[in-house]
Length: 269
Ligand SMILES: [Zn+2]
Image (cartoon, rainbow, N blue to C red; front, side):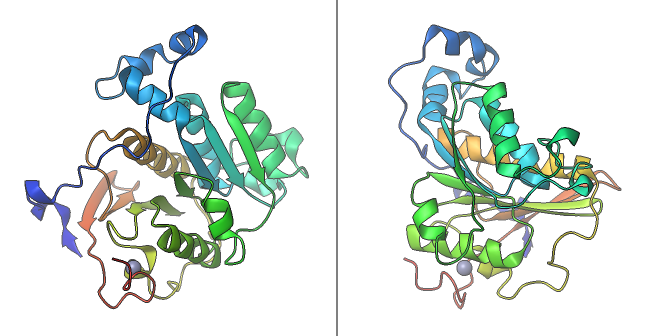
């Protein structure tokens, strides 16, 4: 991995918007999104792109809990959630979309209720399954991009391989202890997860402990990158990996190249 500050201007990942704008914003929406409409680069056209956008969030756990409310609040028009698990008391320290009274309920139910309360203009589609190689393409094909909030590499690889088949981008994130990572994988445009991790890393299992606020940092980065891709603003994290260290409050950004021998995307044009 090379430090990303070696990138030249002609290597910046400036990408066109992923989504065409919706036809219209209603008066209620204009009031709701006033502070977002005032952002240079978003405006009415960007907001209408978000309204038409369809984003899939894989998991309503630590990362999904933090990403989903911001997707809904930002006005992403259609949000899909893949999640089969139920809320456990030990989740509440970081999975803030669920509350104490949700313990024992399906996470997908409490997440959907929370999103509908945040923004009734958003349509929430629930997929109450585990994402795996048998269903990942069919589910992801209904969306423009995905956010990976999975806690295991089997699910992560299933999403990655669906992205390869569909040539669609997704925003990857991981958290452990006081550290987090984020990247955008877009087969055909940049590297994929298997370019970075051909095999599951040794510590890649369900997290052995993480500070909830670190999930919030990485989840917020994931939503920010999703909004950038959907609206075409800024420089995308495609082709880069951000490593965040909360203990020193520093982050490093590495350039990620496609691996010509990648077991996943080597054949993708
Ligand atoms: Zn690859």
